[in-house]
Amino acid sequence: MKQHSKQPVRGGSAVWAVVITSAAGFITALDNLIVTTALPSIREDLGGGLEDLEWTVSAYTLTFAVLLMFGASLGDRFGRRRLFAIGLGIFTTASAAAALAPGMGELIAARAAQGVGS
Image: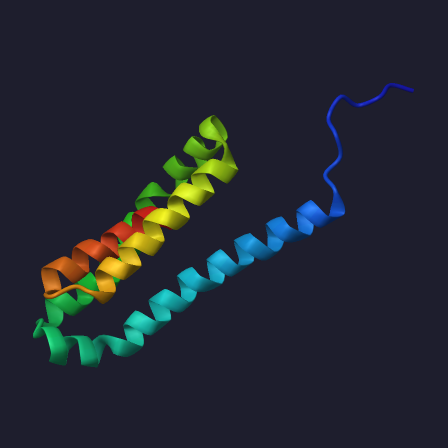
């Protein structure tokens, strides 16, 4: 019998990979739900129109969808773990920028950056 040159994935490593990626996916979905729920408050606090509120949701979704396959390609090229960590950093930084946004334009830009990180 031939021995395979690849080392098997340890059970603990696989479990942690599933837990961490599941948590990241949950946070991403939760973020979208929170923003959708908070739209009336966002409109009241930042004074945006209906178009601005639509872009608040769409900026994230659009950048996420457009860059999804490109991100997968970068993960294959530079390493999935490294790209995951970079994306998590971008998403976290953009989330802080969205929370501190003084106006609708800044909020929309931060939401687009969140989509890039996702």
